[in-house]
Length: 135
Image (tube, rainbow, N blue to C red; front, side, top):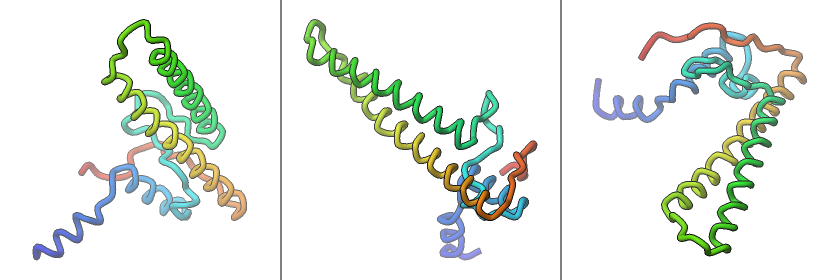
């Protein structure tokens, strides 16, 4: 295998969950857009909640929790009774700026997929096993 061909192949390689979504979508005759977010439970301890309603609930819950954290951080800085730990504050803000948009993005992706499946009259079968061989 030549060097440029090897680099092209490595550059196009997708993550495990992206490959699982593609394999499940193809197996069920759906496009990746119609399939939505990953619906398996490989790598998770609890059964995932990947319906549009479940993801809406989680997005709202995460947003509310991060709002409470933001209010407490503002209170900590404004109150001035104790010295704030800036490392923890920066981590909390960075985490909040990552987790809230990510949760809402997954919800909107699944809502769009559910709408596309409904429009085309297709249904989805949840995966019950691992679809690909180990890497």
